[in-house]
Length: 326
Ligand SMILES: [Zn+2]
Image 1: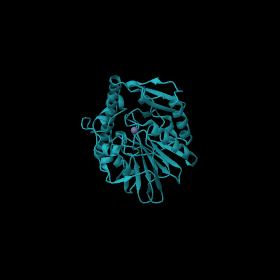
Image 2: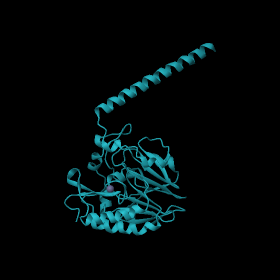
Image 3: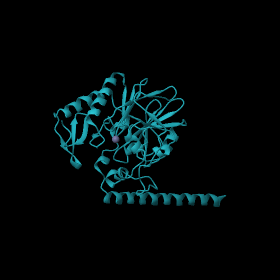
Image 4: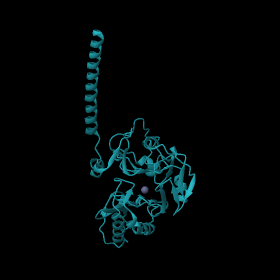
């Protein structure tokens, strides 16, 4: 008995020593890491203060942070990559909708399995790579009936690779992540959706609002009964990308006006990047800001790759220098 106790004590001591050695080695490797790699500027702004007041839900995979932002609505945030993409899991009584599947760097399907046992249907706010990365892991995928959607469903390599340069990563990529193989994998569209379609989740109905502009297949989701509007990349609280060839500024203008008309019915706006909750007043701010930009009233601030940023109070747009302002 005594020897057993002694043995236990010595094992404990040994474990303690191992722990200390482990902690020291981690501290050393972390300081070595920071000495060599420069921390990107966007990363220094994290964690964003707005998250302090949100209710965080614990999940196993450290690549993701999950927040319960409304009843049975989870924001699934990816803070370690510069897009700071946010996907949403919206649950009804019979099924749940996953509005976007994120970067495809961590496994979002595993995260959703920790949050709900309901069958999941995927619908994308649009099909840019940072919103469809894990589509391939799901069986039931709704897609908008556009050529842009069909083209992107074939997958791609280049956009995905540009997302994982050292400047795009804050902290660590997941264990076992294969940099070279990283791509947007192809997925299969099961059913096409159109403007005005409703998806019944059981006790919760979501309406598809086509809001082309950022892309031809951009949509918003309206949970009318709960006053929730999921805006994808049509609105989020960071420079809104309006410079890619698939962007149509005229269509964008019409789409945001349509959203602003809904503002009186909305309690919360949930965008797809940076911070998950905004008041409905941002929809009106968005329209007036874009109007000022289009009328040439806002000075352009140069950004990289010949682009410019137009900032109007809390709203900003990242646009092509040549096409914007008129
Ligand atoms: Zn996008």
